Image (cartoon, rainbow, N blue to C red; front, top):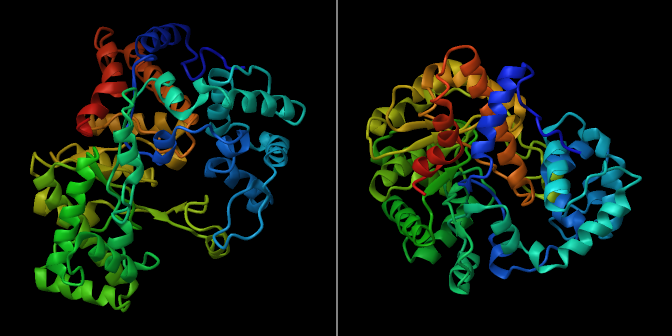
Length: 467
């Protein structure tokens, strides 16, 4: 089903070299430093329920496309926040998915799914309405076997380490269970995602901050103690392997306000009286505060702005957050990041990894910034640009200014477990194709390319995320 030379250059000599490069790095361990798989999978190690719940229900890349063609999310089994009626017949969901699989033609999602069907489950026919039941029965039978449990797949996928993402309000009980289980076949770490207690526009912000205080035993309505609560929880997360914090703000805005002004803004946020401008300013202040904390505790600071989250009020009300309705927006970085960079950007102890959903910013803003500030590194093409074309554009626009060594390898950012090896395989193929083109056009020596390929695949991500 899959062409062995997929994504390699068309020109024969470059294709041959890309193939040779790929053969050297294709089996390197997977390092997945930023993602959203459920730590409960690895803690309990129970069988995945069925093919629909493995491939369709949790994957917004899949169901958003079907939604765009009028398929209700309830028909695809996506849960409702009120516990209301949604389809529970997994075979019916799977058949509906198969009937609409053609909608994914030309998309990276189709490539990830076909890679999973073939390499994880040994299915080599084309998936569609005529083969839907055959695929369902085969995958369902596989899922009952011990070798298809989460931990076994983790080891089979050759995952060296994976990071999940948790709120400061999370008790990390699943990570604790993993640690106490004695499993030695995989390393699962957490990442500190404080959005619920740093974003005044996050639903239930005031109540979240109160709970934050209950957890830490501090008076989190006092700005100094609120900051101390973050320090305490960051230390707790580090105890469960965290090497990074993760910040998904609406903009890249940062601030370095006088303490009294920041404290006053915090009080307005607690009272629910912030204007949108003030809420953005407080988020920006907290990015700078988190950067300062990172200098002290060595957590890598990840910033991924530029998404208008939960664009559909109707879907947000019915199904909640993260249901495929996060839409990219134009993002400014040069002015927005300046307060933070003026405060701490020259500190070599700090690592800030920047992501974007605005491709136009790569050559104009992000590569020049990362190409000069010691603290800055560029995250890979991701989310809407986690595609062969997106990755190629990224390498072309970033490398000329920031080089390879101000980037941090690849991350899969997925909730769909079986897509992890597929996504990393795409990234490895695209990078090998890019390097082969540089060699073929005389811009990289042939003996340098294998070193760069290994760095892009494995070494840079380990180094950047301190893993």
